[in-house]
Image (cartoon, rainbow, N blue to C red):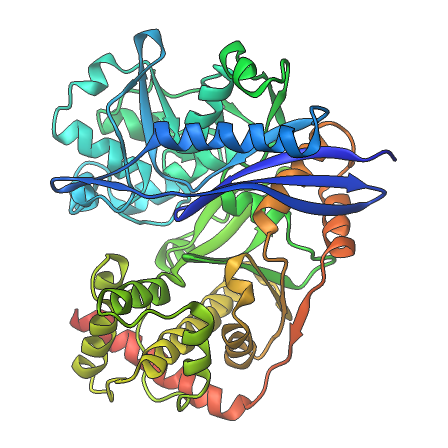
Length: 497
């Protein structure tokens, strides 16, 4: 087949970029066209996204792609993080600034909500993991504060849907993104209207939900005039970035799970139906929408955020170092001395992560890591042990036998963590591709225009186009002992903190 061009606009919590996909005879090449930082803005005690600045950069990414690769681009597709939202009022007005999911305003809101709709009922209605950052608690915060915005809002759009609206004028929500809100009933395949009405959340502002691969139409004239390409098609891929990343996993057959590794690590399996059970609730798993009628049954884990925050703190102290150097120091440090529970609440928020890790170890009766390498090793080994815990839960709840783990995303470049994951879980680890999110975004666009027939076809393109690194487990006895300590630690820590 002739070469086809698809542009992925990939928005992450730290940066965004445009990635051109060149699809030719079952092989895909990627070319980055534009990259930009994605920096939140603090105003007094609140944290916001610069949504208008982000949109300007996305348009620049499209213009750069046209300049570098020509006007014959089949389509563009946007993927973003989940949970954050915007409200749209009369005249297509964006009401207020878009809050960042780490904004503190939702602190305590979840417990307030449970006074009206109990925790179990929320899970049975949505199948989604409980995190205070979820859209449900962001909008319930507005209800509790009697925000006037809810009275004038005409539509609620998730952050990726907001950018699709800016490009096309369409006010719809893409399925994979809508499900992250904890406002969508996975089993009924519609918004959880009954639950939302009990909470006083207006349901008339909820948009139509469309499937991954939906053609949203051409960009609006004002955008077309800026980029010089009238009629450029916008496809909604899996707009949630993890949905795109999982679509880009180069797996085949059965017996595999994935970890989309980055600031967050999202570990799970694909299912045909959501797993909404009391055991899934107890294990705090989530059912997010996937491509091709699938669900992503997964657990969100605080991931390389731990290391990112360590680096940020050391830079403030004048100890600048890159991730490669941090990993090198960790590899040279003594193994399995101390562990943390990555899900201890203070680890979720910014602020002196090295000190938090040291404090946790001291308060749980472990030797505190002192050097930069020891601190990073403690964080990475703890993540690897958390992977094992989540993997065992997946096998128990689904009845599947998982024999290999596919790690994709930026974290797949961390060879030390990849080997630790293989060692801690006792499973073969396949690492790569790094660009799984952009790859999945592009491949779903290709499916939408019938260049590829199915998700299996798309994954074959990923396997044929990008090399993988394989890691086999070692030292099982030492890691089994460490896992016992880790489980005991987490159990004691949950009771104490």
